[in-house]
Image 1 (spheres, helix red, strand yellow):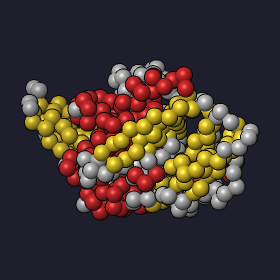
Image 2 (image 1 turned 120 degrees about the vertical axis):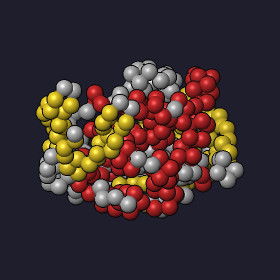
Image 3 (image 1 turned 180 degrees about the vertical axis):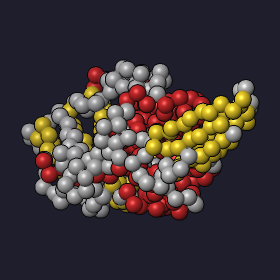
Length: 376
């Protein structure tokens, strides 16, 4: 058995203050399970009390945790473990794997993907945020969930997303391991204070998939990976939900959200700055904090030295992305007068684009919503 309650709420199965703005600072989880079964929860196993019919398993979490991330799983589990040594400071992270007994050998092979993933994410995003609680993958009867320090794994030891590598743009990594682990940084370490800002969890975590691709296959492949998600965008509702009523935004927060972040990266156009923004976001600015839309916007403005207010508003608070309108007026021969303008919901919107002005020469051009930009 397993539990997953994101959105519906943790109060559906245990009494709690069920609001994302307030995380318990720590947890003790006690689970009774029939003899022969093993009960898993977040954090570390601190005690097992044996009984005649039932055994009690006591787990302890020492880090702040979203209530929807508190999890239990009960099954015919076997355990194996490993250790990850951080390249940052040689800290030792315990890797614990709990899988059904029939799947032990498959799991030992499949979970080899964890270490290179951690190397990548620690380089780009900062140290794994929960060393004190360990890192776990726990086999579940459902596909996956980012339960903090206790990631639910139900991908069947297959490539891609349940065997479909179209979701990974042809790459054969295990989508559930890579995506759900990304949530340890975005969603679990950095958490939204209202589910209306769930885009903070999903846009950034979907972007971490491309970070993994960039680490292992290069930037060009990472851009291809991000762009492959374009076909899954609906543009029917905003990515930001309605505040105060437990209403999240559109599912576009995954694919469109990652493309939005890639757009920010290209506007900033300074990769060392881009990576420092994401790194410091996790290690300094919002480490173990709950935040909202304005916090992210103000942070990006401050770190980049730019004003992203209008860009955030158009992409996140309206269904449609900005549309580039252009016209060509022939002057003579192959010479044209080019005029460009953004069509947006947000008044005063401005965003640069890169154009090929002549053979082999690319130029960044400011384009606004208010008046056409002319090129000759």
